[in-house]
Length: 269
Image (cartoon, rainbow, N blue to C red; front, side):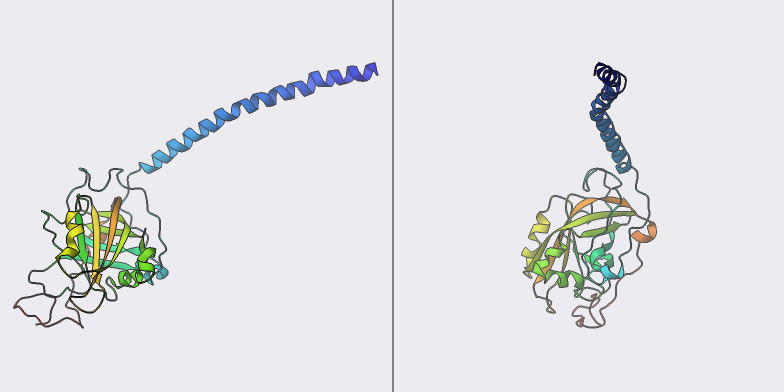
């Protein structure tokens, strides 16, 4: 019995106790290892976030999104962490509007003088009286287009389902003539706006960067209007080709009334 006890004592002193001490030391290192890993991940994340954005094109909408799916796609990191509308944003005219989840992609033009009817195949800038209608400044940029195929019809169609709740969170991209892409996120869908000057009250009062999209809710020129409001996320670099579409609009082949004023645009002579 004494020899067995002696043997067990030798095993404990030479094997069990050293292993136990080693395990205790390793367990004590766990918090330090976890903290070190956390610091590495944070630093790596900041390094990736601060990488400058290249002029690579954004993902092209698939056939499913063009058909009206509300699936969103991811975006690369912003070119700058500065919020849109800060002093780092230069005033530049909008040239192109996209809502990729709805398949909307239109050139933007300034409203022609004496316009009696909006042109087709473009979105137009409604002049709110700012010194410059430019995304990124602390003001609203107000765009409108017909609720027709290839224009803002997807906005109207989506607004009729649960008051457009599926559009909340969708991205709106507005390119400018300085080769930038201002990215916004839809925050509100406003239906049945009155056809009078009060329609523009909120947009006129805006003191932060916003994009407003407007289209008709019926075929009457004086019918109610749909408005979609989007808030800024950031600014991406864009290629010159992406930021300078060639379309200038055309008189709508159907529905455009005859001009009442000589030289008016959008209507039929």
